[in-house]
Amino acid sequence: MKIFTSKHELSGYLETLKEKGRTIGFVPTMGALHQGHLSLIEIAARNTDHVVCSIFVNPTQFNDPKDLEKYPRPIDADIAKLEQVDCDILFLPTVQEMYSGDEKWSIDLGYLERILEGRFRPGHYQGVTQIVKKLFDVVQPNKAFFGQKDYQQVKVIMKLVELYSLPVEIVMCPILREEDGLAMSSRNIHLSPSERNEALALSESLRRTRENYSMKQIAELQIEAVNFLHSSEGVELEYFEICNAETLLPAESKEEPGLVALVAAKVGHTRLIDNIIIK
Image 1 (cartoon, rainbow, N blue to C red):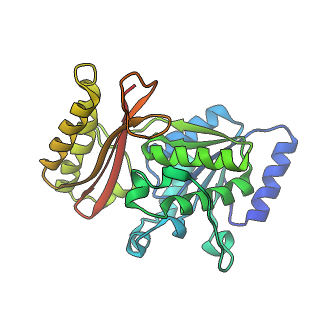
Image 2: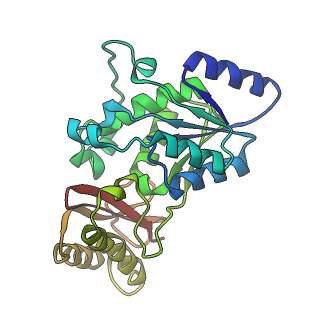
């Protein structure tokens, strides 16, 4: 695996590959890699000739400086994991490499940054789109691979691609779960054993919603999930919503072509998100 820390050197190397007609797959991450991230690398490898993974803890997408400070950065372990799945290229830039001075960034994401995650993390998606645009400019991939666990983020990045007419295909890849149903997340390492057990209420609420979908109306499913989570020990619910899978607006009817249920909650001091495609 080749490791680059310079934008200029990486883009130059990728240009030589593209001149040979090779396709580039890209998996942007913030590190603290787990099997969910590695599954994105494997999917990218099946769909493109060369896979680039980036590891960059992006400061502009954190609302809370403490959250940024405690974000895990086990870089040696991450490199070993990437080598195990035969990742071709790792881009490992510094903050100084990605940001120069007092940069300004503003993109009109419309209602997408005011609902769900946007409501609880104001400014978060401005930071996400800022760094993803920078990374896309460097890598210029044919396809970029993102996890379904960050469902709203995928929709936001699709909006970014649309607004800038970027020639990249966004591929959303399935959530990987632990055997007990917990969605894999870099934040799970912050959970104590008891909190980890309490966190299972999130995936359980989603599972029940999908299981009961054919028998109950949307409003009833949502009320039941919210009541279940409010009564779950250790869970501080932020939202549980059943939405149109395309627009992420609240679902009004079962006739809508696609439906997704999304949940966010704090368990202890750790904020977790999860979702499930119902239809």
